[in-house]
Amino acid sequence: MLSYQHSYHAGNHADVLKHIVLGEVLAAMQQKDAPMFALDAFASRGNCDLDSAEALKNREFDSGIGRIWPHRHEPMPEGVARWLLAVRSMNNDDRCTTYPGSTALLHHWQRDQDRLAACEMHPQEFDALRSSFRSSRSLALHKRDAYEALRALLPPKEKRGLVFIDPSYEEKDEYRRIAQAVTDAYPHFRAGVYLIWYPLLPAGRQRELFRALQKSGIRKILRVELEGNGAFGDTDRPMQMQGSGMLIVNPPWHAAQSIRISLNWLKQVLCPTAGTARSDWLVPE
Ligand SMILES: C[S@@+](CC[C@H](N)C(=O)[O-])C[C@H]1O[C@@H](n2cnc3c(N)ncnc32)[C@H](O)[C@@H]1O
Image 1: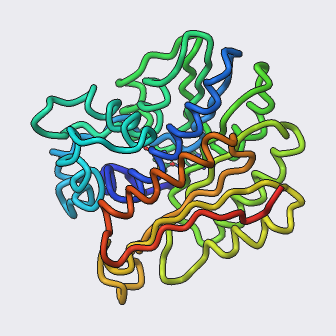
Image 2: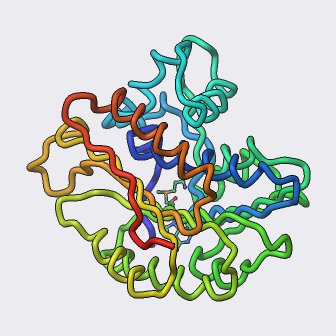
Image 3: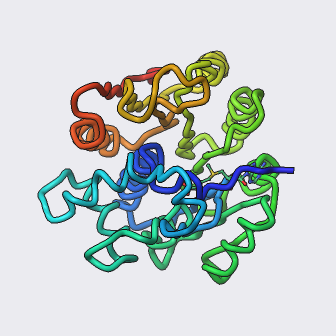
């Protein structure tokens, strides 16, 4: 039984990074008019209430949206502005109380011709998702295992699509499972853009994900990381997330360029003195 609930972490530095990168990739893909498919394989609840007891328990949003919100009226890179505009459209201008998760953002940015599928296994999280969004021709909500959905829903009929893989990493072997799931999905959908989020924890298990993907034969994998070096919590606590990263298989060229600009801005705002921003090819073309 899954116990992870995203409300405790909503709006933190990792959410901010993943959602900005998600918006960058989607916008680059939407430069073409052709319909596209998005699969939000690990969806969570859609929207998180930052005034809820769960969000207020550790106030993780202070490390992310809390540091960005004061800059909302200032100039900023296009990729950050696109995401912040979406967040602002769900809030009053004075405070950010509703933090949109991946399904809410993908739904917000969806065009008439696009299709979105979101999968969530946790009963409460799925109920929350279903109460926020109504399934329609262009939005399918699945109470379904993400690994099974990756096999069943790919390739999409549109032949163009983005696959967002954002697991909770509750199990130690999840890094290897994710690499295997992408390796298995890829031959069926080579044109797909796969975005894989991972935490930077002292145990360094993301390296298992890297090694497995490096051996998979898949080319063109961009790595984007933001590490706080203490700006996101004590570095000596074993379970303290020090930062996070995204791997992007087949990143659209425009997105790779503008993600670098957004990442540098994020570093300046979230962790100006200590942080490290990194963007390189885990596997080149
Ligand atoms: C990190 S959260 C997702 C956050 C969300 N993508 C966002 O950006 O707002 C991971 C979610 O995946 C769900 N989950 C974990 N394992 C799953 C599985 N095998 N299939 C579907 N959902 C799963 C968890 O219940 C949790 O809600």
